[in-house]
Image (spheres, rainbow, N blue to C red):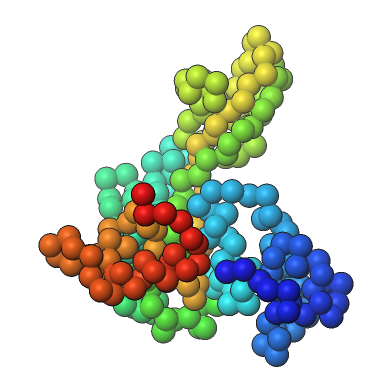
Length: 259
């Protein structure tokens, strides 16, 4: 949503600094200290891109900050077991994977955050570690939990060293971005031998744990998701009147063409 000049209260240097990244203070509902924290997060993520950057932006574009619910870590005995494990929040569910064991928690079955955490406490794979905001959001709807995954990619890592030390642990595989071929990786030393000392630009796939489950006031739905399609159309695939109103609201915010 565009910020109009008359809506921005440039009463401090901080307000002017924030206006450069198109965020403004909420008069009466946000202290300078709270606003300062939001501006810091905004500037730290100013040049990030991609789906994760969008989800991070939800924490600073308004004063409705993202809340940390809990940390999830799958217990493993070694790195090999860890890199075959996965924690992910996808559309409408939380999925835990450890080897051949898979646990799914559909948000339709656990309507509130409290219900989901209670179920996770009975998991055979992990036990959640409660974070500072849990009490604030425990009776909020689970559908507002933000998507996340323990599977990460480190993009554009460059080096021409003869022995390249990788910047992350729990590496699944390393790809040469030039030809997308897999690069041999010495797991116990976390090194790559670059005998020709050529400049390599690498994509590093790795596992990052713990994963923090986060809740936000905004319910995020991708336009190509099944959830969004069900919001627009009936069971026969025809656009409903409510779906038409929703599309018009989107076009009001972002004018584009149907074609």
